[in-house]
Image 1: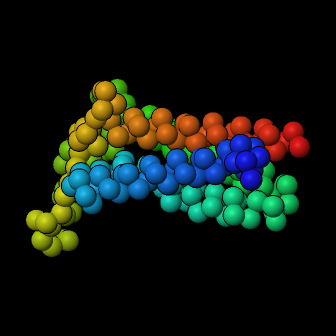
Image 2: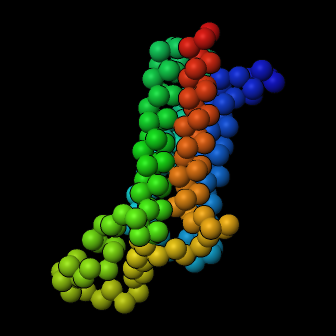
Length: 166
């Protein structure tokens, strides 16, 4: 059992646990903490929504999957979290004013012209993508997402490397 937790499968499990904690934390900030996500925040959740179920299948059926399938799934999930890392870096850059954010959440007003057709939106929360709602030690939630996604990539990369060595 100890070998399973410290070997290639254990690294994949660690990536899953880290990813699950991150997305549950984001949802807790939203539903318990009252921090509404912007468009980029919601986009950053996609690698978790797609990658974690795939990673769960991978770790649950680890011994039943042929090695090429395990390797492919590991790469696919790692690729999703590479995308997530990039999204987190981009969003952090938008928050710091390094990059221009999407027009739909940067306050340019162009997207607001058609909102009258949607009816009363007085209860909706519109959050600017360049607004930092929470930070710790100067790192915003988008920054933490970039770091966590990169850590998941590192864990899955090490798992992939170990699988190749078997």
